[in-house]
Image (cartoon, rainbow, N blue to C red; front, top):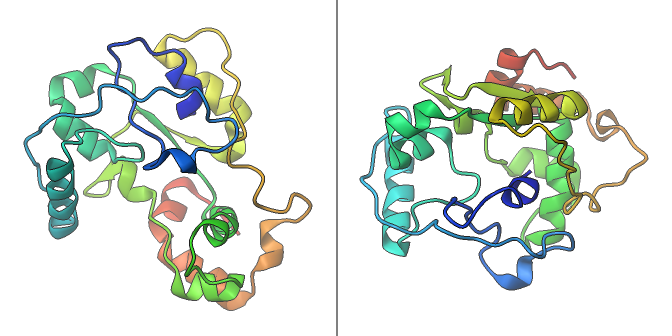
Length: 212
């Protein structure tokens, strides 16, 4: 989505880098132009994660980085201002947590040296970032639309239409070659690992009604 939307942006729009280092760029991501993401900002603490937010803001202030990819809606609102945030249509996409963790396992295993190499150990010992905190604040959704990865063919065009983009934007597959194509996510779980994911991502599951 970042790749597709960046091509619609002008020279004054904000497009943060999608990787920290040039050698991390994947096939399909070439041509992305990061711009207008540096600058200072006034830190704003989250009452539900004060220390974590303070650490992130201090890091970004040191780097002179005002915007970055995968930042939360709360951080965008704090840094861009209430008025601008309120005038935009804000959307994000969520994914069934059980399915997401399978994809996360194959992605992390291929990229991170100390990542567990078997799925059960990964679920037990490795915690992927909770997407729920990216689009909520104090357990309230603060974006206008939460699309579903499972309904991408329907929800992506809808989100685009709300932004004023009437023509279809094709989505790339830059991160799609790591996970085996011929298996269901359910095949990777046993009763214990299924319940670990259910408890860990209960907020997402409750909000969107996901089931195993």
